[in-house]
Length: 432
Image (tube, rainbow, N blue to C red; front, side):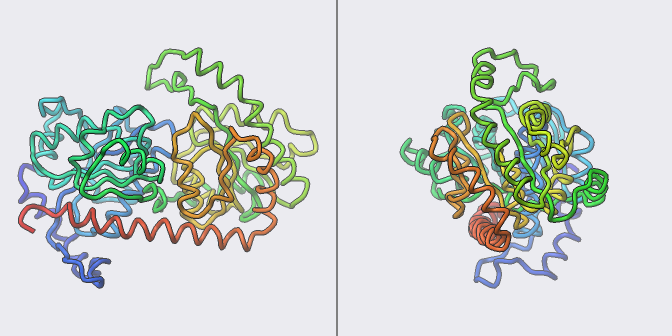
């Protein structure tokens, strides 16, 4: 497709649907742009972690809900996009477009499809993630097109702050945790609109129920009668991700080894208490592929013999859609990752989160959405001591825990509704 006319022609059905169903903001008096606009979505930060994969379908769901007439082109950051991930996206979002390639600092794209997408895009949207990872692309996009861009649901400061200057040129910047928002303000970032909006993953809805149901049946896990647990290295050993080709980091590896007992003894004690004091089973799963083996070696292998029969280890890779279908059928979650608990809360499943110094401030999201009682900083021994009782209380009081999860989900999604109004406004094409 070589012109905006082509985009408009292809979007006729989408536009008609938007006119029939209406824009969710129309009732609140907002001006509604029923003509299709083209949003170029920069996302897809890595493929080794189901949480990073989750950002893309979550934002696509938000755009579908709040800007239904939009044409969306997904521009992956990561060089590799596995076929199963692409099929997951195409199944849920059949109208999604995809372009690959990189953009150099002079604005030359490595592929014609990317050059065309940049030329026809009305707006560049940087998706939620650990930082404004594609800050250089935002800089170039602004320079060569003079079109607007926005940043939605990011943390600030994890990898330094190379994005500091370009953020002030954004139409809006929404940070996914209050610490990042304040840090950016203190650094002098001054975009016209700056605020808090939780990670896009709070709106994820991709599922693979068939695969999940088969797995649970095969492993003797009944709906509502198991709880999920995920371990984590202090520093993700990215040298174990084949596609990244990173060198071994002896300093980070030494830190991982130093802290593995400190960080995982409380998880094992929580497993033991849940198994011995309730009728629930435990599913040891993973968010990053490097966590699969430590689920066995750092958790399952060290459990008492009477506990092991009621603990299941997920010993194969899985994709985000299957994970969500399994989380939805669980009684809750506890562990040291971030996006699996977000997926749980997105579906009203209680979730306890562990964080520490090596992680970014993203864990503060739990406090920001009203779940401070389920947030534990393992660099604080008082939090470590409170952890096991809190996990037990969560599963032994399912009614109260469910209400707490629902309240947090409603708050997170209400913030997303408000902030998507700004996305809708700023992504309108020129002349509207």
